[in-house]
Amino acid sequence: MESAKKQAGIINRNFFLHIHANRVHVHSMKPTYSFGLGIILGCLFLIMVLTGLILMVYYTPSVETAYHSVKDIVNVVPGGRIIRNMHRWASQGMIIVVFLHMLRVFFTGSYLGNRSLNWVIGVVLLIITLLSNFSGYLLPWDQLAYWAVTIGSNIAASSRELTDLLGITNVFDPGGFFKKLLIGGESVGQAALSRFFTLHVIFLPLSMLVLMGIHFWRIRKDGGLSRPMKYADDKGNTNKWYAWPVLMWTELGLLLLVVIVVLFIALLADAPLLEQANPAFPENPAKSPWYFLGIQEMVSYSAFAGGLLIPVLYLVFLFSIPYRDREDQHVGEWFSGKSGLKVIGRSAVFAFLLVALQLFVMIRWGWLRNWFPDISQWFIMLINPATITGGLFILVAEVIRRRRRSSRLAALNLFTSSFVALVIFTVVGIWFRGPNWEFFWSVKDWPAI
Amino acid sequence: MKRRSFLGRMALGLASLAGAIAAVSYFRQFFPRLAGEKRRIPLGDPRRFPVDTFSYLEEHKLFVYRDHEGVKAVSAICTHLGCILEKSMDGFECPCHGSCYSDKGEVLSGPAPRNLTWYSVDRAADGKIVINPGRSVSPDDKFLTS
Image (tube, rainbow over all chains, first blue to last red; front, side, top):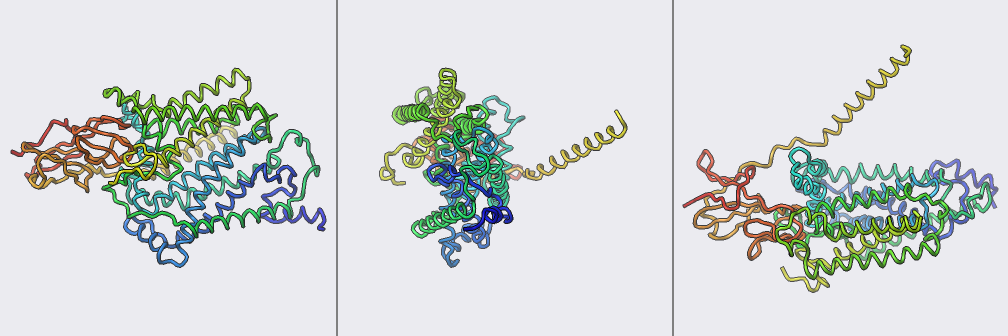
């Protein structure tokens, strides 16, 4: 048995291990509390960086050669196919795990107490993860990539829908500003590819690395992972283990597990690569990556409302959670007990019914423009399933906050219902939309084009 | 105010001003000065287009329509999110989010915020027929060929 002093010293003296505290609370080691999701994300990031370096060596970011260099990586470079598959599937894994991690942190009330700043950094990391994925999506320069980014860049410009209605686009055009910043021109071309490449290999990973550092450092500063109130007074060695070697073994185990899973999936499934980008003809349907199909479903109602207004409101909500809800007594407790669980259940059912009902009406009978052909774009923009859903959610959460006098219950309600709605929109976008974005029960029913 | 603190503040103020100017010019570099993509497009001999039909000009992302009286040109880019429209039986349809337009480019259904833009077709100074994407016209305007 190593001496206590030596155990503490190993962590303290090593630059890389020093990101850990030398003691870790027993509760933080419970697998069913954190599920190790943060560590898993770190492991996936490591895989992304290592496989990304190899891909970068063989890839050329030019519209003439990009597609062929990716083909070469897949077909010529020894092991290239596996490396590309790993990169692709680990990135998708990051998207899934980053959302799971957010769910875990939210439902255990881990943004409470002094952890509000770390929640905010986490939300920024979520955004960077999504942007990294999206910027990587363009690089193969195939049909999928080209049209997804064309749509994406026009979503960035979609505030024009509003400024056009106000008639001020000529003098005030934030849409054009962001679009130009993103793709460096009027349409997706070499400038866009260069910009996305730079974002993807330098700017975003570097930002992510720095923020990850702060994210981990804050955990230490905030006294380790969050834990229930009953452990709040544990000072010194009470209920604590030395991080060396227990935590190190746990982390190594998770790393091995993650690598095995990613490697296994990479061996079984190939990352898609369609034909080379053709700016003259879009794919039909032209679908974004699956994690953006919820947004794409919403932009099919209105570009501004679905692509900008609702996503921005959602982010504002996420950022504001720790500042609106200050009921610190719920920290570290899954679902805030029975009353919380009840609210979560009801919110999920309410959100499901509300969104399903609107989609049913829309798919069965169409929407405003089918009923009133000459209707103003204002109504198209402001009254659609995305805005109605968002508006009602905010209203209900406000009612709960006043009636129940609990900001935590209101937060649980709004977080659950908006997440359920996001999932439904995404599922509809992935499996139930076909050519011309029409509704189909299954891909088998798609008409031949 | 003491001279020392006055000089200190002045220095700080000037340094922040210099920093702000540097930041603005730095970020300015990310916005290229674009030469307009609105160059005139030579149409060629109008008779190469079939009569009473919309023909898609791939390179310029527009449809040219010709009938016995003349020709006109309409943008093939959906006003919603920039996908290329397909010609349907009685208008245009967007494959990305299902916006539908009439033959005159008016929005019939879907999320599209604006009607399609019709471009002016003219005879240039050198006598050639050109499409001018910088000038929009009404859907009823035609360049008369007969």
